[in-house]
Length: 196
Figure 1 (cartoon, rainbow, N blue to C red):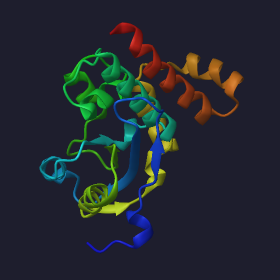
Figure 2 (tube, rainbow, N blue to C red):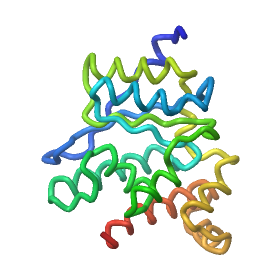
Figure 3 (tube, rainbow, N blue to C red):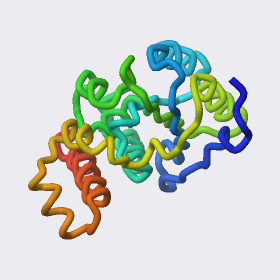
Figure 4 (cartoon, rainbow, N blue to C red):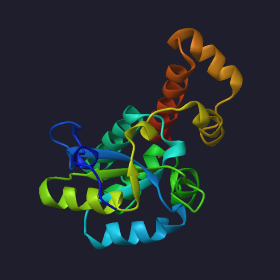
């Protein structure tokens, strides 16, 4: 599949100086054939990059991914990581879970995933470009899938255990329902650090 140049760009997000991994790159994708998720994962890992593909339904914005990546980097830096790889540690934090199986159930791509989010850890140059191109060969890039969309609301509330009452209360503080939902997901991610 041929993709326009702008679709291939993945801006680098700096996490913080002094961490074991210092940056992430994030890209959304609408897969042509969601059933090929296993092929996509295997081909990405074969490239040797440190990358994770998440089910876009469970992603609550770029801040959600950036916060999870920061916490994963801090845990690796302090030796408190639960996973062996930065990509799996990021999955644990992004899903607000301590258990890899539960994290995969919440945020792992599967045959029903209609949106994928690629997160590349410490990506740079040709390696990062190769990972992005491989990822985009499975569909069309759409970074809007990273953000909270109305159709993601119920799923996000379900997997992060957010009640209507909680959302309504938080909305009085944050204004919009989207901002409130994002804040509650971020709270779950941050609090997962306490239960390690």
